[in-house]
Length: 223
Length: 223
DNA sequence: GTCTATATGTTGATAGAC
DNA sequence: GTCTATCAACATATAGAC
Image (cartoon, rainbow over all chains, first blue to last red; front, top):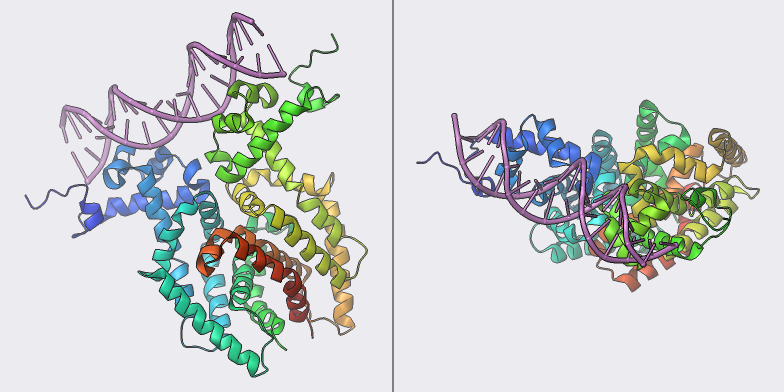
């Protein structure tokens, strides 16, 4: 009687039950959703990729909607919490810039299709934005963001007053930083073709950015 | 006998025939495809948006595949040819930077969802890349790109030797420039929510970039 | 927990009247 | 050219055996 997990077990998750199958399904779903997007993905393809049949997907996740939500949640929380934490941390502005660039270029090199997937999902399903914020900040997203950007904004202001940085709003600062880190991955198919780069050359292209981007960004704000 | 346009007329386009309906369908398709993506769009929604019935969509465009292709082509050629032309033109490097930033921020302000749509399409349908290149460069894409980037690369090298610019490869140069222009639009839903900007505030955010981005970019490459 | 078989609802596409 | 009606294929979801 204690070994009859209902469908709710997946949500409450009191015991691993048979974590293995659920995990295999989630892994397969991630691959398919990243490649085809939520609308383009087929449950049958996910089942095949996981090596199980389609009914089992519904046994564990009830619906395509919930499965895609779980994948989105998992992937979003792979990128955003670390960013918020870094930007709101204790380092100097320069240290934060270096940390964010290193974090993103390293992380995205291992997951090169993540930005394309996330941007595409947010473009077509903006209703998932709250879910993203919750994954990035925990409870009270508004307060966390206000604190993080408030603090970073103060640091920038201090640098400006000290004469070591040109004036810039914290929003433009963050937008520029993230743009330079993320866009080349989001536009990878385009850039690769336009520049005639194969996978290896693209990897080298990113490798060079790891050293050049910090200089580029710091220089841009040098007085 | 001269007023019996077959389905092929849409391709050959010898006479406007009844351009009006075809155009209304194309406009409707553009709206729906931009919002939902190729996989998420429904022919019925496009028909409703155009104020016609579904059968007429197939009369003019034969299939969803062809219709989405036509939309993609049209939207891609709204962005890329001007970029190639500007980068390959006769101006100095600084003039090209200013022109590209002005061109993109102005253009994308009027079509804020274009980057999200194009990146999403290229992510899920990389097989359309050749179509994009053809739209951007005409025939012989390889040669055109080699000429454009060759020329721009030479200009950069000259500036570097003259001591007015820090060394940078033409690929990193272009990637940085386009990243800073395009990414904020592609990530607009995310940025808007994270920064707590409504539509008007986002417009002002972009307005400020029009003046700040040229300085930012030029500064970044100042020796 | 996992499977096969099937119900149910959409969706792209076509036939044929006008 | 434009419409109504309908088909055939597919996709999600469920029922029920094991």
